[in-house]
Length: 427
Image (tube, rainbow, N blue to C red; front, side):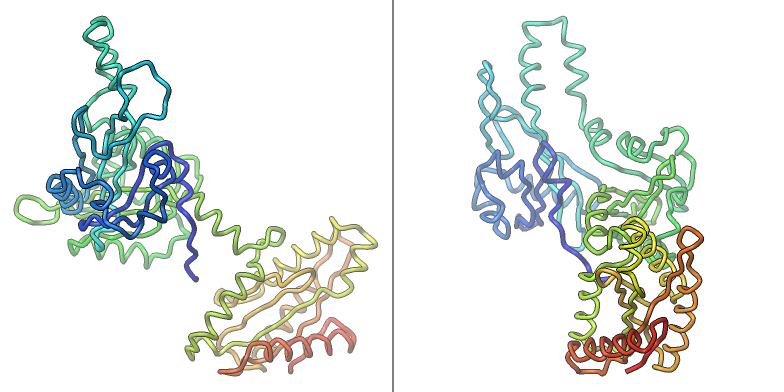
């Protein structure tokens, strides 16, 4: 599948700051909150050193914090107080307080270890700090305010999805946010194997790669689909880091998750036809253009097929568009269920579908599509309305312009439609 790039919608929607930098302080991500509160647009700072914009930061301390996060694979904190801000920002909130600069809690989390990148998260704790200033005058509120300004561990626990396991995958600790996200009680998870979150949709090869990496003392990053306690599947960007004991031997694993479910859903919407749930034309075009561009022999050995539902306009006009939609969905399901897993099928538009049959001859493709044609012919809408389809086939010739390929397959479909329909024609 071709990778699709989308803005990090989740980070941009959060009411706190997030930047991604490496240990040379080069900025590769700058979210909307930071753009608003620093008045520095993304396009102005991304790709440049943070030093150019904020020379007052103690970069010796900052570098040490970054390296600590990368080495131990867990978040660290950059200490701030009223006299030393991480990044000086004016408070936007109207207040009667003398506190004009934003007070910050700064978390430095490992992000892409092999690129030495971390995520720096900035939380506005100005209101909590103001409350702390009032403690001297309001002794009665000391205990309540101290709860809000609890130690750094509580901030990690509530704001970062983390799980720690033993060498053999037994869960030994989880954060509160992790439990909330996956809808489990902490006491239930402790002692369970991390495999309880596995989704059958993720290939075993992915998990083998993960375990091979961490058991060889290497970190692993990737996307996983995991299940909540209610069976809901969610996508997470995962970073698993091995933890060594005092002798340098592997003893535990630490994993940090970021929810990317919305991003994955958006990606799926981009490539999926909403009615039939097949790939859409844009996705099919992406695949065939990629294959033709790279001209790898194993990929270019394919048969192109266009299928057209016979008399579809008559079905729509006679029975209505709802029945027409049911017919298209039924044909789509028949195509998908009749073809092999490696074959690609998409809705081309209207009542047409396009298919890529891989690693078959034209004769073999004709036999496959005859079976598909028979499968479509068995469809009955509302137990009474019969459906048939016509099919045009052609073989892609390595090096040719795909316009010629589509012209041949269109001619084949035209012949199938004009010679009686419900048939397969090769060109």
